[in-house]
Image (cartoon, rainbow, N blue to C red; front, side, top):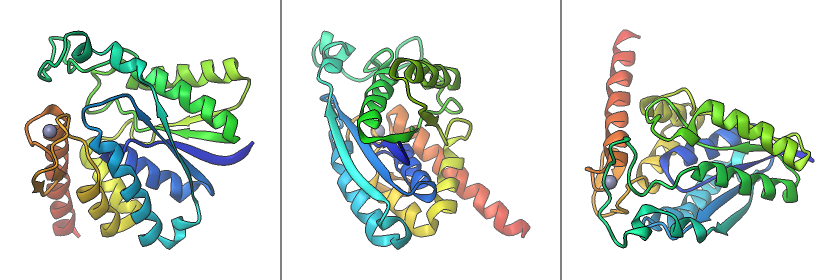
Length: 239
Ligand code: ZN
């Protein structure tokens, strides 16, 4: 088993920042994306562009970017609410979770990632789970990920290490992390090439990137970008 890493890479802001984080640390970094018939298939299409730009614009990372894997998990679509009730509008439920939520989805993603990492001989698995801004997803919480690491290591008889660099930082700090890892060039890739919008809207480019600007994912991303901008200005003034 090498000290290479496998990054759960959807093409969104969080997983792109995680990919840069892994490229900064590990000598070989492979990526995996899941295709489960999500509406915003546009996110998966962003993946190749982002990988290509990272390789082209960051020579120190170019030799580290390894294979990309896409795994189809069609069964997830069959158990999501939008599929059970046909084509319903995306809405937030009383529990604070969008109705597209598939219970335990990240447990499934981590299990597939570990099975793939096992085959590829990769020790480190990196995911963008975070419980700071959006703790609504119980499968993104730190305890859940730690329990999964233990379960996967026991169940596969390996010593995987699950990394979640975004677990304790907010969206503003995620922008700051991108800045620290790759400067303005990386921030620009995150801003213009990554996709987070629940509705798959890629019509208008805002300061914070593409998206409808109204869904919970867009609101979170826009608020984080604004907060980061304010913090950067204050930082500049105090220096
Ligand atoms: Zn949106």
